[in-house]
Length: 317
Image 1 (cartoon, rainbow, N blue to C red):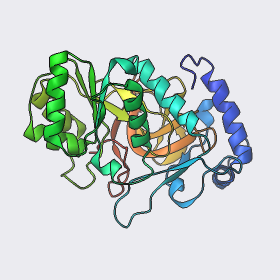
Image 2: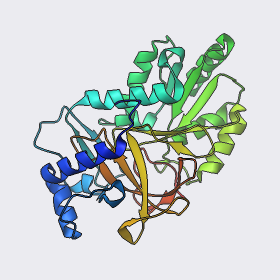
Image 3: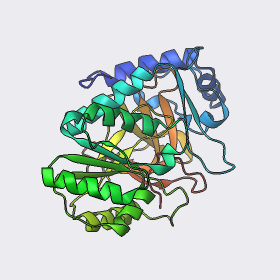
């Protein structure tokens, strides 16, 4: 994806028109809402509910997918499937986003604590982190599952070397690690990807971040906002305020009226325009509740349905 994108609205409207014509699920959903023509403004775009990824093949035109990303789900729940025509688009998206927010990945050691994701196939998060680990080319970069002692030993080595390090972890695993080990490491960034997966009682993000900050003597905890149904991610460097890359945009709509766009500062449903989703659907209504801020950031306040927690979503209230 293009890091210096300046004509977002124009591209979004062109892509919506294309997907309206060639994505049968999006078209039927729009017609069902009484929308029979493509919009002339981004603020009039109709967003497809993310739940459709569980019940339909969301494709723009017919193609054989290069890979299929799947959500983790819970036992007995239907998982989402994201049919990816070209994996290189996803790689371009996460590589450019990382470069934009954190700089050259080769300057970092990338550590991953993602046990629940490694235990299944189809995780887009694992694909992204694995790609960053390989790009970093640091000898200590890698996945550490639940071998906390080994991870701690590596962190002590990296601290001694004053090596810039990112530890990317699912929330419950980071909390488990923090309960057993505490240390101070100035060059360390901890990035939580959300998700308790039934391993712990649910906690709001502020509580999680306070525990992690105290254990690792950090001023801030970073977060990633992404999901199976998207090929792009937003990042927060603290305070739960997320920034989108230039090819991704957040729109907040009224919970009771999917066609009503809410102004900045009002809480509603998070909708995502992800231009990387060129071959599936780039216009997705999530199950997350949030708001936009005056500075262009957005916050995630909770979820509509607490019974269905997606793998890459953030903690809910």
